[in-house]
Amino acid sequence: MSKLFPGTGKKGGKETGNSGYKWHLEYRFLSGDFIGVITCKGTENDAKQSDTHLEEGKIESGILYIRDLGYYNIGDFEKIDQAGASF
Image (cartoon, rainbow, N blue to C red; front, side, top):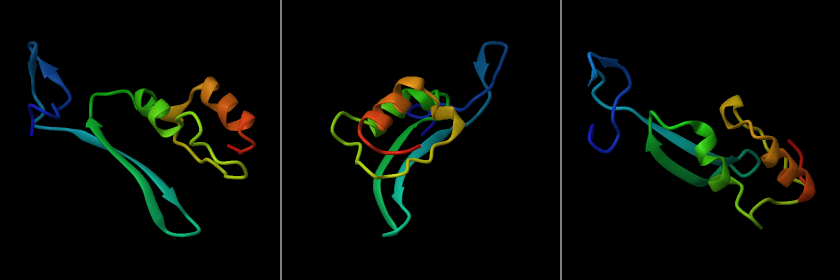
């Protein structure tokens, strides 16, 4: 797993962590359904996955989007607002 999902931390230029990964989840609170799951390296910035979650035409009007600060991107807020959704 450490080759696909390298750990964090280096000592003397050598990786010291065994493995690390992140799950990015999209979840509907009212229905209890997971509608999207992405697994990526633990060393990737959360904002890198932001566009994947808010693809063109995927933002639904009237929906409240609650996101972790790691996904902060002013362009995403504009997309959400233009689609008639909230954040």
